[in-house]
Image (cartoon, rainbow over all chains, first blue to last red; front, side, top):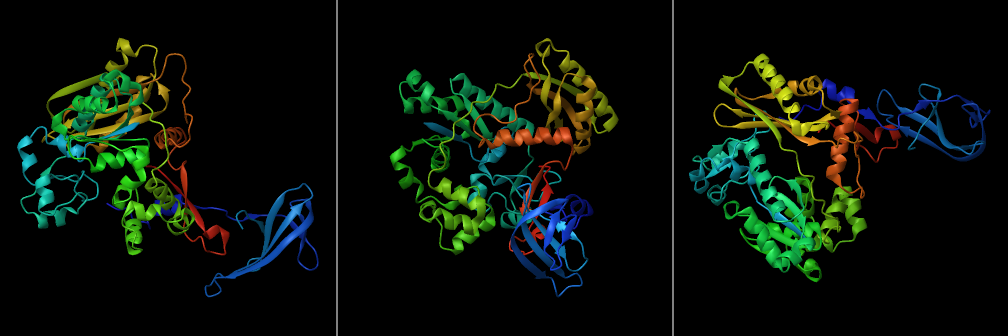
Length: 92
Length: 393
């Protein structure tokens, strides 16, 4: 018998890869980050916007930044334009 | 040279040993209890009237109303296969058993013993015996050997030299490749029906269109990797069985019988100082069928209680009352240590990897081993591109 994909256990056990994680970000007046998780930003490498699912009740409005921190770490953060708040994310 | 022994429809042939008259009539292996209603291997008489393996049961019976369904007998099949592998080992071959009815072995070590490649292969066929209609293929690479065994006639051996591999594989059908049904359909819709046509395509384009499975199939169509054959470790022969005076369906009684069997098997002098890593529980069922489950323990153990607790839940899966219960200590560790081996040299060895994953799963619980499944790789939202899904297979 083929398992029902809507089975509650299946929904509970499958997880999303690269889920956003809340981050502590301090930003400049123009919205660009200058500090991520208490680490100063050394270089702002790239910036892009994602506008998606605008046809649903939960549209995705994000402003992404790829930054290099002073520790040498390369990281991607975004500001959620819908719910507010900053997040880091892998695989962006 | 790598040789591949192939016995198509092995489970059916093993089940038909008790009723050989059926092998001349349209017959098929019945679906397993609780599984999908797809028939297993079929006899030549059934194939002649249009019944094919993995057909839906209803469709098979509609195609051939006289079709006889043979109950699967996994314990008999395992036992028969073990006999075949041991006969090959007795003849000097280090055998790697890939599945029931398919085994690989290297011929290099025994060629001088038998006076050349073909006499050695002939010896292997003799060791297997004529009643199984075994076929033997030999080539420099594993997949080419499997392909040669698949096209050989019963009792025939087919040797493919390295310089002939491309020419030999080119006209063979794609069904020899381990691909999902929809992939075959996709390739057929593109006009690719033969291994040679697939091998002629650029590898990058195949990977882009069909993903990693497609890329692997493309590699196989070009002859495959020259992986080594690893002879198996000889299994232990610690078996204890208990025959009941009448069929038992009561789980409590079966649990008690299991407890007694575990104690008896562990107290055998051959087991002394060694720990049990893998154990199998099998049963002869009322009505003629059989049932078998094997289990890799979280960590090797010689405690009767732990083994009993690990095996007891399997008794609930018994599909019918039991006439005989049997326990096999399939794999024992060396007395020196209990260190488990996850991967041997050569990470491509999938069977060892899956065995390792089974052990990880056994030690950390269900849901701890996951696979990444791409669901929307095109999505602009990173977290919606892929899921990780627990694997309990």
